Length: 372
Image 1 (cartoon, helix red, strand yellow):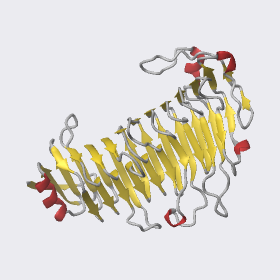
Image 2 (cartoon, rainbow, N blue to C red; image 1 turned 30 degrees about the horizontal axis):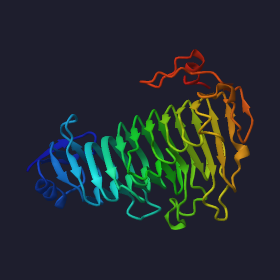
Image 3 (cartoon, rainbow, N blue to C red; image 1 turned 90 degrees about the vertical axis):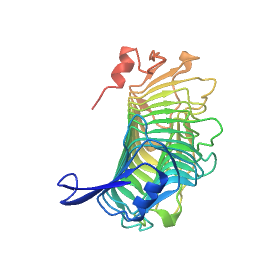
Image 4 (tube, one colour; image 1 turned 135 degrees about the vertical axis):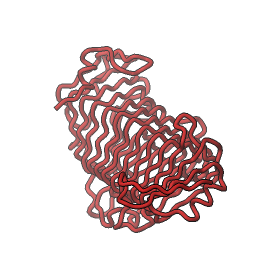
């Protein structure tokens, strides 16, 4: 293993940055044993074992040296666990075959002191579980978090699980379910999560709830402590959601926007409105804007477009400018919704391209453009 010390001004404050050149498990173990803040682990292509952990090291970058041939971490309970590591960047890594989690990042249990400034880019995480509460990417107690251009396939619990995360972005990710994996949800935001955006992602057969805004969290795990919402201020836009039992579940969410998404062939419902946390002080699921979406479904499968659970305020949902097309029975395209829809379009074929899923109909194309 070679170690180079460089004096740089950016991106870190003035000081020594240590670069570790990693070619083997042994190199990696030695580097982690003496890891300090402002370190970069440059990992060469090859096969590495799973089960690595880092605690309390800030300004850390872990990256593959060859984006076209990323290092592959295989097996074990999880690939990587980072605890209390702020200013962390992971990029160009591949993981597979883990029993519990692929990538796990948390605040070390300090619920009022989040880890901050986390960047996950160009990661491939597959074959986690295959069943139970096993997550591809798990984040707990993180503020200012970005997950971009990542690929996830096959997991047990959640593809991406946020517990008490804030100011986060998931963008340009591909999330695909696999046979033999339980795949409870795709991305999920709960436990006091807020100000979350998921955009421009492709989700294919991504479980029972491909996107879940909210959820059910034990009271000791909310961040910040005492938060009276599972999730709030959630934005879900410009995604393509294919298959799944439904496209999206709003579960105890207090304010969300679902806009300019394309939904294709859900198995049972288009959306679910649920309330799983009913502790005192928690508002009912409420205040969701559902607009400018394209929904292509089959009436033979989707008999009720919206599944509405008890203890919800479904009447506060607002529907407008959505295009609904029952491909097997266009005359029955108009949905039954929990609140009236304004300026909806019913029975109009959006003429989706089978390869790109982009609409060919001018009216459908207009719906997916940026709108006020």
